[in-house]
Image (cartoon, rainbow, N blue to C red; front, side, top):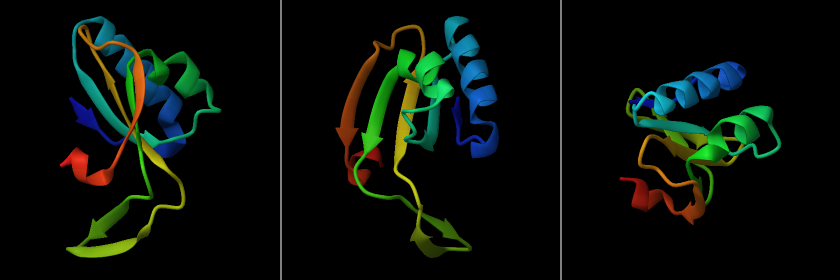
Length: 94
């Protein structure tokens, strides 16, 4: 399952993702790289964390928008996922 949760409710999504991963699902989340949050320490850091170099640019109606005002990370949780942290570039995510 892939999701890019509402950032305002990230802790709720992160907790649910961890629960589903413990039941056997593989969950991939694109979230802000905020390592100072409870969501990161209680849920997201338990899986594979990929810190993305640079700021992501999202598209709207096929047009690239300004870069995000924060760094991003991809968090992968699941039954066979080892807790690791690494840095990746945007091109390696394609």
